[in-house]
Image 1: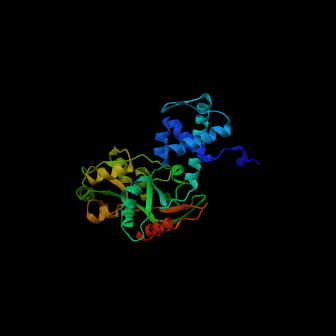
Image 2: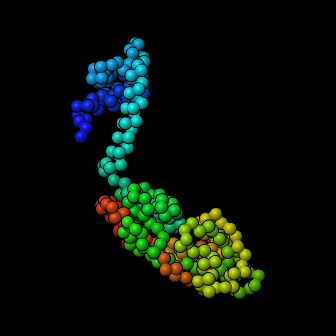
Image 3: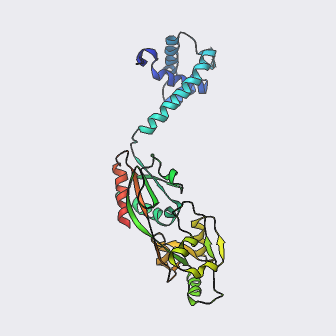
Length: 295
């Protein structure tokens, strides 16, 4: 076992030395550390006495590092930075921040309004939202809560269902009216988007599973993302595949109208999950409960 108490100088002398090296001034280091210039000078002299070498050449107010000082500064800076990162990773902040991550579409259309309601409630706490679509990035151990799409089976994570996924074509009211009129010329483009996960459903998957084969010959329009497809549908530029619970507000307002046929329950859902490796904080429990209760 290492005898650090005997082999290392007092650690505060290294903190004072690191600040003095960065500023090349005892006075500026003292201002940063909220101590007197004499206190910095005393700690540096204590470290030099312990080492048996000078770390600075005193040239008036200007400090010139010796060869030993330059060597130690590089090592001490990296060591203190590494120690600081380790302590930050495990320290419980005075005001804990709940780290929540979500798939992008859910965050844009469902989660962010819920988070706003939570932030205004009596149960509010600090939280930090990240939006990503890669499952590996979502299921990182440093996330406290994750809201994601799937079947509820996420190894190493517990989960509860927020709502089942029901997919149906949606569009602006005039677009849907034209489609449902049955006129052969009224075929707005199907708004396609890249599938970022194998269990995402797209137009070919919806057509196959819903049996709506007449859409096979309809024109298509490529979109950069699922969110963009919904944005274009809102502008009357085509039909998008919409997940009904996600678009509740847009449908309730009449900005989007579901097609009267073709609702498809995919067998997937949207879940809130948390890691099995540690208990949830009280703050994370409050946020989880609020999201589960909002439906």
